[in-house]
Amino acid sequence: MNGILGIKGLITDLLARSIAGAQAGGRLPVVAMPPIVLEHPQNPSHGDYATSLPLKMARSTGMKPMDIASVLTEYIPAAAEIKSVAVAHPGFLNFAISDGWITEQVEEIIRSGECYGNIDTGGGRKIQIEYVSANPTGPIHVGHGRGAVLGSSLALALKAAGFEVQQEYYVNDAGNQVLSFKRSLLARYLQQLGVDAEMPAEGYFGSYMTDLARDILLEEGDRFRDLPPAEALEQLGTVGLRKILGLIRQDLAALGVSFDRWFSEQSLYDSGEFAGVIELLQKTGYIVEKEGATWFASTALGESKDNVIIRSDGTPTYFASDIAYHYDKFIRRSFNLGINIWGADHQGHVSRMKAVLQALGIDPARLHVIISQLVTLRRGEELVRLSKRTGEIITLREVLDEVGADACRFNFLSRSADSQMDFDLELAKKQSAENPVYYVQYAHARICSIISLARDKAIDYTGGDVTRLVEPAELELLRKMLLLPEVIAQVAESFEPHHLAHYAGVLAAAFHQFYKDCRVVSADLLLSQARLKLAMAARTVLARTLHLMGMSAPECM
Image 1 (cartoon, rainbow, N blue to C red):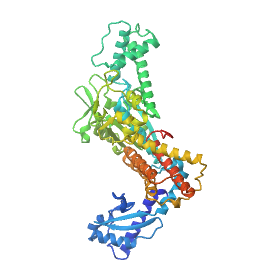
Image 2: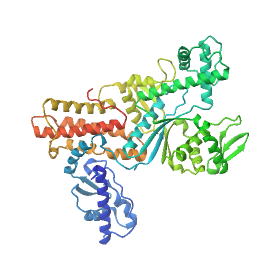
Image 3: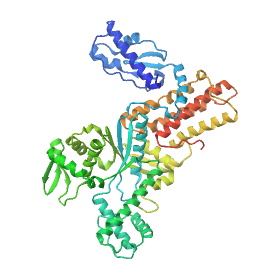
Image 4: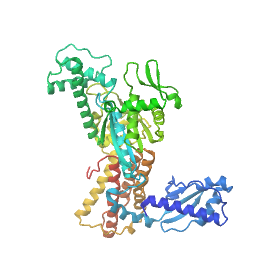
C-alpha cells in the first residue's frame, strides 16, 4: 500500500463497498451516491479520518443521517489497517488507523529517503510557471521576493507530485519602460562626464541609476559620449539592461531561486511571432481599428470594454506582448497548464488575458493566475517604509543581507498569496521558539544532535524494533510525518505552497513534544534503537519539507 494516500484509497473503497452491500441487502435505497470525501477530524480523539457521507446521502435516500451511518458501519469490511469505525453526531463516520500500521511506516519512510512524499498525480503533464518577471529597469524589491518564493516552492511541490515543470522569467526588454530606462541611463552617464544632460520626465530617478552609470563609465570608458544619440542610447542601454539583469539573477540566486529559461519579450517581435498572432486574431474577427489605434474586441467575449493592442503612435502595449507570449506558451510550446504569479497591480489583467486565450482557441482554464499581495516590513511595532541606506524603496537584497534566505523564504510562504502579510525583521532574526523559522530548523538540528550522540555511544539503530513505539507522543509524531504526501497533493491541486510552511510548523511541534516526553537515548538499548529509528525517519521528513520550501536543513544551530 502506498502510504497514507493508500490508506485514504482503502477507506474510500471500504465505504463504496459498504454502500453497495447495504443497497444489495435492501438496507439503503438504490440511488445515485455523492462523491466520497475524507477529511481529518478537528478533534484528533475522533480518529484519523472522517466523512460526512451520511449527511450528504440523507436527502436522496429519505433517511436520517445517523441511521445511514449505522447501516454503513454494518457493511464496512474488516481491514487490518483500520482499528475502528465510529458513528458521530450529526452523521459522521470516523476512522482510526491501526497503531501497528502506523509504526510500520517508519521503515517505509527511511527506505524512501529523499523521495519520501513523492506522488504521481501529475502523470508527467507539462506545467510552466512564470514568475517574478520584474522589468529589468532596477533592482527587485521585497514584493518580487514573495512572488519568487511562491513560484519556486510551488515548482518543487509540483515536481514532487509528478509534473514536468519549467520555471520561466519573462524579461520585459521591449516597450516604453525600457526606453525610459535607456534615456535615464544615458542622462546619468553623460552627467558623470560633466555634460549638462537632462533626465527625462518619465525617467528612473533612483540613486541606483547613478551608481550604474558610474560602473559602466569605469568599465567602458567614455566611448558612448561621442556616438550619435540613437546609437549611444541603444548601445549604452543594452549594457545597462544586461547589468541590471545580472543583479536580478544574483539576488534571486541568493534567495535560492533559479529559472530554466529567461524569455525575451523583444524576441516575440524579432521572430515575427507577434505579427503572426495579430494576423490570426484579425482573421477570426477580434481585431478592430478605431481612434487611430488597433484594439482587441474584448467586448465580443463578455468583457466590459475593448483593449488597445497597438497605440495610435504605432507602439504595442504590454497586453499586446502578453498575447503573443501566451500563444507561444500554449501553442508553440504545448504546455498543458500555465501558472502566472503576478503582483496585486495586475489583478485587472486576468480577465482580458483569459478572453484573448478564448479568441485564440485556447481553453482559458489552461491559464491559472496567482495574485501575490503586498508585503509590509516591520521591526516589532515599527513600520519600515524606506531603505536606511538610500532613503528609497527597500530592495530584496537588503532584506536578504539582514535576515538571510531561509528566513525570507519561510516568511514569504507563511501566508496564502492572496493575503497581505507583515514581515517582522526582528522576529526573523531571533534564535528562539518564538521565531517559526528557528523553531522548524532547530527540530532538524536537534535530531542530528541525537543521532550524533548515538553514534558516539556506538548504538546501531538499524535493527530497531518499531513495534516498541507505543507512547502517544511517538504515535502522534508518526501521524504528522505521514501527512507529507497529502500536503504535496494539496499544494499540487490548489497551487497554494503556504500549506508547506504550516505543515512544517506542525511537524516540528510534534517532534519537540516527542523529544520532551520520550528520552531517545537511554539505558534501555532496545527502546533507544526503536526511538532512534523514529528520529531518523523524522529527520527525513523534516529535511524533505524544508527542501520543498527551498530552505536549508541545518545539522547544528
